Length: 51
Image (tube, rainbow, N blue to C red; front, side, top):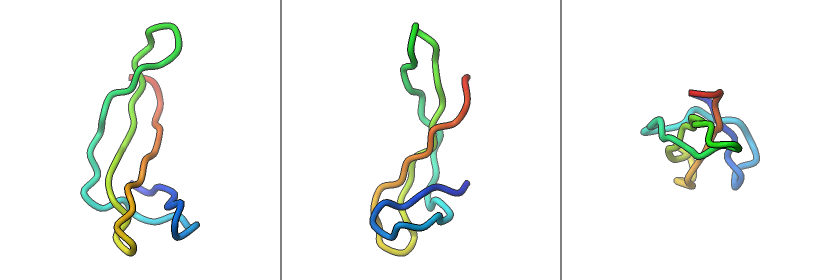
């Protein structure tokens, strides 16, 4: 899964990616991927579609 690293300011492959649930508007569940940047170690986050 690819995400945007805020510190590096580039798109990179997310290392140790895990899918986590998020609360959406109106009680709708949303999905997201979280992990770390392989280059700088900053936490990365990518919002996916509805569950």
